[in-house]
Image (cartoon, rainbow, N blue to C red; front, side):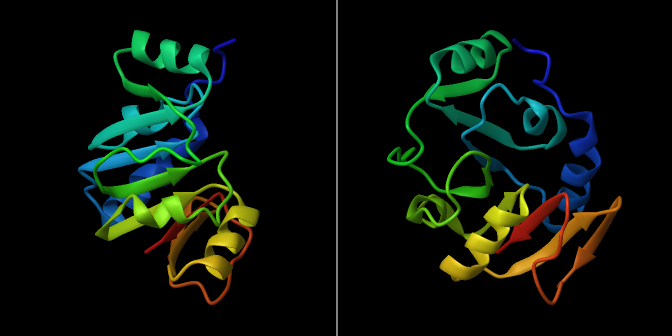
Length: 149
């Protein structure tokens, strides 16, 4: 079950974004599943939230802060420097509501990036593709990760 809990191919992207805009002290991973990559790559404290009790228990057994909640309605009670979205619809108002004033959002699919671009006031500041961080792209290109502020 836990073969894919660490994504080696995402490490360089996380490191590039942290160098570009970090450090991020508080990170909210919405819909984390069993992915522990951000906790082992980024410097800040990561709060993993997922609806699946097995995923949450696995992450807790790894010593990580994991909470069993529905990310479409959960409000953690604080704002975060960085929001990571995985399996959440990118037009959820909770994404922006859980960010601090200088916060950012990182997502890993073009479709989520397009929804963020179309449905929020956030600006696409950078993308990571072909092992390069590109700042201020003119549009939402095909990329590995997308960074919004």
